[in-house]
Image (cartoon, rainbow, N blue to C red; front, top):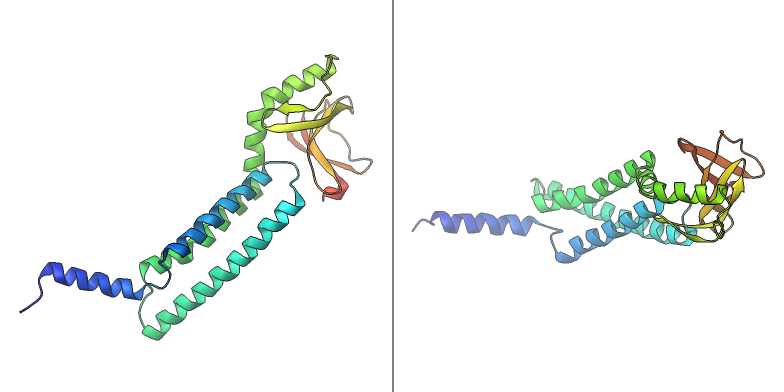
Length: 206
């Protein structure tokens, strides 16, 4: 007796399922974990300088993730060549996740989008800080929360105001509001953001 359409659909589904190599929950859990860590990378990119140890830890995981992904892609391609058939769609989707994540993170880093977004959200509070320091408001140079940044080492510099928003092992970095474009000096480099605002970092951060 010929199989009905429902039975045929189930057989086709079973065949497709049998072809899948990387459709298990652990595989997608790994992708989700990698996505969370790469989002943490994006958060680190939103600061003038990141914690070197944290960056190193994420970089090590990313390297391991890349090796794991590369090995699975080799297995998928090898199995497809051995079977002389196309890989299962779930395996193709799995193979495309890591490159997509990396492309998004690289694009955000190259364009400085996380840093600029965090800066713009914090700019009103940063402008208030500059006014307080220039007007001599008591306590204006004390460490404080400024928008989405923790500011320290607040003080006058080059006719304007400069403060640190983070530190690495051997250097400090942050923002400066200056009336004119400053020259790099005394081991400090500047990069223009917008208007009177600049990023500054000690040369050891490079």
